[in-house]
Picture 1 (cartoon, rainbow, N blue to C red):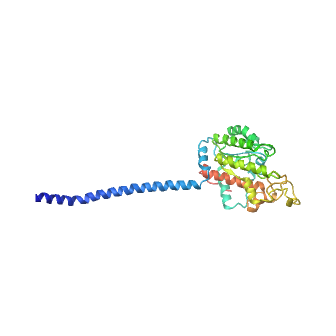
Picture 2 (picture 1 turned 90 degrees about the vertical axis):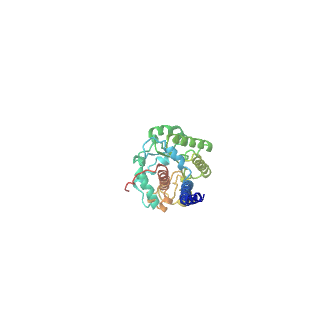
Length: 313
């Protein structure tokens, strides 16, 4: 009996480290599993927090872009005389001085990715832009343009010609349908507000609010040209303002953001191609180029994410 007790005691002593070792292993495994869970949760939280910093349109536009089947780097502009003008977009290719660091980076990105024809050759009615047109024209014809051009990104800005007699509700319907047609094609849309118009403040504001509303509801990027104008010249944006009465020069030479006709962006020679803060306050087309450039570059970075090297200036 004593031998049996002794043997049992010895066995217990010898097995203790093994048991302890097994328990320690289990603890280690549990800690490892817990560590993985914590790390996974941290990554998930980081993604959620990062998502909160992203604009509302990023994820929806990624899904739209995933359906795109056309040529990369194509950027179509659907609009009226403010868009078909060579002062818009085309002029920036050759003249773009005094850009700040952020704007220069945006320009380099766009120039390195966008098809060269989209600077100045995609102009005219078959490309979705010509004078005197309204949003109804866009709604009726955009399917044809999309089939012909199949653009990766589309900028839409109509409304200035609608102000005369198109009801706000109709303008909203036409805007929404035009955007939806582009999205169904797999084209990312940048929806732009119109510039202020002399003598039509209330109507312009109602159109601007509709544009912002549709952009938010359809989760597309907004290019707020109207806000850019008002932020820089809230009181004297119109070339028909009394302070510019005696300023020499033609219709577009007035040193503010809207020309003497009270409708179109200004384009005074002194400030052409000048993207300094002063240039952005004195040339309406330069300002429009600036806001569209940043909107498009934002889409490239956040949605398209091109793996390209910017071309030399």
